[in-house]
Image (tube, rainbow, N blue to C red):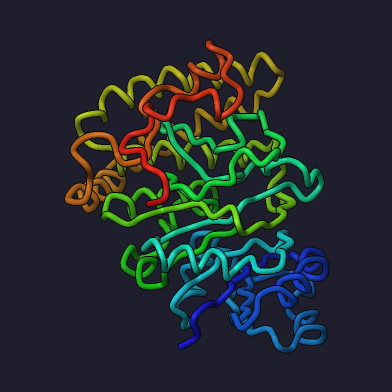
Length: 347
């Protein structure tokens, strides 16, 4: 069995493969490189056959999203560690070794490198930055990015640390943990499935961490544009499902009630900005949850034996919405360390 397999999920991404796959081949050492194709209708597969015959291909046959695509592909990949890598990521020298070394030294199950913006390389990238967190109402944010405020990388996050979630753009995960969790929740299709996976892993006692010694550059928005009703729908729908599925019972009712109010405010904000389709997406997201309530409850019952009685480790115990929009906290450094449950450094 190979120690490390880098698995790139592709859907009509020939341009990204042509641009970024050479850096992966150059800087990944002895790792096996796999491209899993999600039923592309461009000539991605033919392109790989002719230009990169050394790359292993897994043909999924159809587009079952990020979640389903990786679940299908990883059934065919044998390795101790999976590295799930977006096709629009440029990697750098030593990007794998430093993360694997950290994972083995500190018994880490899931990890990510530092994620910087390809088009603005002195700044962090939106989807991952220097490790992800979530507040008590289920709103995700990162060291280096809170909502739309993205920080410049001035060396402020050079410490190895535990986080709540890592980005699916460059996720390192022990294969045994991925399969123990039965992979991603395929109902999510895309967006927040990595946060859900990390939450379930943390509830089972696995450690999730950030490794600053490894750096990659991510284009971002390669599948859906940042302003997209489809993306809004998936984010709101999946986030609501994830919170209901994983949050301890002691916090669930209050959280759901608050989220109903905050999501309603978000919908009204979209309307005030002249984005009725995105307002409708928020409504559709909630209607989907109510229409599939029995299935979501079944997922919650399955996860309940692993839930923490109180706050999950590394959850932000306050409201990031309040901190950002009311108190004006724009940078992660403005949040108190003591407000993260079970906080610790890298011991």
